[in-house]
Amino acid sequence: MWYLTIQRWTGDRQKALSELVEDHLAWMAEQLRAGNVLLAGPSADMELGIVVFRAENQAEADELCRADPFVAAGYREFDLIAWDVHQLFGVNASRLPPRTGNSTGPGS
Image 1 (tube, rainbow, N blue to C red):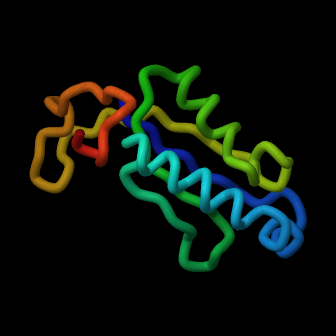
Image 2 (cartoon, one colour):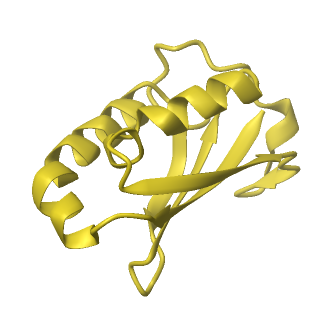
């Protein structure tokens, strides 16, 4: 299942960035390598973090969101939306094979 998460700053953004941006980026890179994340980035005004990713179920998706260093440290909270994606870059996303944990990209 695909999920969309929208994260909002709840703590001091500048302090969070100075303390945790490297950890956050390393965590995000690991999620990309694992094939979990399709799209990620901040809103244009830098107030929100937006991530589209795959997980087996809501509990796994929630766990993944809580593992983000910004969330784990209390600087961000998140909304998690299960998303039944029908089309993805011209591909019927509902027919993509399940993720295996050792995949190299979003369609793997």
